[in-house]
Each structure stands twice: as structure tokens, then as C-alpha cells.
Length: 460
View 1 (spheres, rainbow, N blue to C red):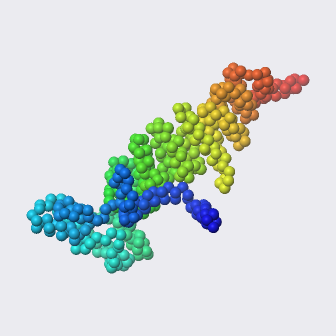
View 2 (view 1 turned 120 degrees about the vertical axis):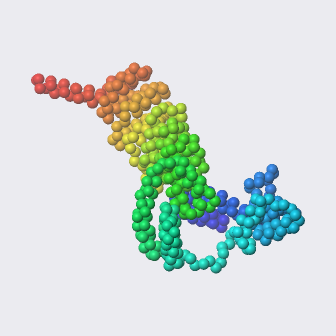
View 3 (view 1 turned 45 degrees about the horizontal axis):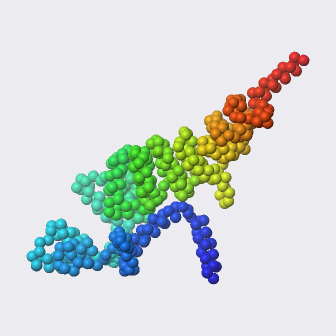
């Protein structure tokens, strides 16, 4: 019975994860799981007070929700204010005053803040108040907006962008009435020339202003004003601006902190990050970016793969072996078997992968890529041919060099004679290999021989 249940669970999980974006769900669920664990520990500390770490780790202990200081003192008053115990705080304050104990101005102000917020009622965390006034009806909201805006007009207070943003955000919840009133709001914005200024602000590229905005957004619970989709869009644009304007160390620091807990990177974010790494000549971080691309489900994006391969193969680097491992993963994506169809090779992708394999000394893998050129009717560049010949020379593989010359001749490359000459000079060839090399004729040789035979026949 146990194995039957286990099998059913596995099948259910397989069906579930085949219907939803697995990578995104997994990454976001890990972070939400951590937050859920913190919430459970905070709300139900009685279930977590039996096991203590040695030495004690304070940040992992449940939050204390009952006062620990019993004596009448200012510290006890501060503790009750922190726990939002209204009546106990007032009683403790009265006892201190009656006993003639001075209370600091900071503590007194904290008590006043508590009373201003809760009045004579005790705080009720986690419970919503009953008997809310019905202010979210469209008719009432419309009347309130008109009254408020009329007061602003009477007092000659001109609305700004924040006023209209708040108004439009609330009108979204008002159904048809909100849609009809939103048109009037847009016309008012155009009359005040606010719409044009908004479009100009989108292209400011002011990193200092972005930091100020982000600081305001992270203050308190301000982030709750944005839903999940808009919050992801916000972080995506903020990260793109960082890639454009900040130093690469700061960009990578933000990237590690933000992804994937704060936002789920888009393909454009990864492209911006690759371009930032290129601008800062920080290409040693590319393998870690490739690992993130695989985890995020971007390993089949042609634009990202082309950019990644172009950066790794543009120049020689000390990390050629690591780059070749990335190229091997990309090659596996193009030759993938199973439910997903393999990606189609492009000429540039073939060139980049062949270069990376050649520079890493992986002669056989590089030759496998060279054979792909003929299969898909693509032409390798002279750089690819030269790098492969260098690789064959380092690994002492004259057979591969001869095969390369044959491939160049079959493709009709103008570099065939040059490659043939290099092979004869730089490799120790056997008699069989020399004979095979002599039998290789380029298109120019064959065309010359054809023209000679034609002229002889004409002469006869």
C-alpha cells in the first residue's frame, strides 16, 4: 500500500510540474517557504521552545510575545510598548509617575505613539476589524473623489503625478464606473501636461534617483502597494538600469541579492547582465550566468545563446576549459532528445562552439562540430579552420589536419591551399598521409585543369 501511495504521489507531482513553469515555481517557492517558516515560528512560538542551540542563535529563536521584566522600571515600560500592550503600558507609566521615577522623553513619545494608534483598545495582530465602513462602493468612491478634487480646486492646489496615480489605482477597482471616470482623469492629466513629463522621466537613466526611489519603496511595507507582477516589472527595470549605469561589482552584488528572491529575471535582464560583463571585461563570471540561465529555463533562447557564445569565443581567455564545458552544455541543448525538439544550429553558433573546443584542446569534439558544417550547408570562417589546425598540431593529430584540408576542399574554401601548405610544413606526415594530401585538389586546381583540357581540345 505504501509503494502504491508513493507511486501515485510521484505521478501527481510529474503531472503538476509538467503543466506549470517548473523553474520559476521552484525558485519562488524556495523563498516563500523560508518566509512561511519564519511566520509560523513567529505566530506559534510555543511549538519551538523546546530545542535550543548551543551556543544560542538569537536570530533563529522565536520572537518573545510576553513581557519578561516583572519589576516596575522604564525598561519594563519599553518592553510593553514594544509588545503593543496598551493597558499594561499605561498602568506601568502611572506606577512610575506615582513612584517619582523619571521617564525619558523618548519613552514617553513612544507611549504617545502607541496611544494615538490604538487609543483605548488592545492590539489584535492577525485579525481584521469587523464592521468596516462600506467605502469601496463605486458610487461612494466617485462622490469622494469629486468632493476631494473640488476642495483642491477651491484651495488652488494643483494635483501632481502622485495624485493622479493614486486616483487611477483606486478607479481600477470600481468596474464600469471607474473606466468611464478614468477617461476624464486622463484628459485632466493631458490638460496639465503631466503625461508628456511622465514619458520623459522614463528615459532619464538617473541612477541616484533610482536608488532614492528604491529606498522609498523598501521603507516599511511600501512594497505591498505593488502586486507580484508589477513588483517583478519594477525590479526588472531597476536591474536593467544598474547594468547600464553601475560598476560591475555592484551589479553582481545586486544580482545575487535580488535573484530569485526579489524578482524572476527576464531574458532581457540576462542579456543586460552579459553586456555589462562584456563592458567591464569580467567574462570569468559567464559560467555562473550560464548555470542561472539553465535553472531559469533560458537555455533554449537563441538570442541569449548567441550572445553567450560570442563573448566566450571572441578572444582567448585563461578559463578556456570552463568555457568549453559551457559550450558542451549548449551543444547538448542543440542535440537534445526526448520530449523537446532539438534547437537548430546556426552558422555562428557552430563557429563559436568549434572555436571553444579547439582552444580547450578537445580535438575530437571540435572535429565533430566541423562535420556539422557540411551537414547543414554552412561555411566555417578562416579563424575556425586555423584554430582547429592549431589544436590538431598541439595534440599531434595529423589525421585530423588531413581531414580538415579535405573538408575545406569539399566546401570549396579559398583557404584550402593555405591549409594544405601549413599541414605539409607543420606536421610529421606518413607516406600514406602525404599521398592523401597530394590527392586533395581545391576548386581552383580543378577549374584550372578543366580549362587546360578545354583549350587542348579546341587546339586539336
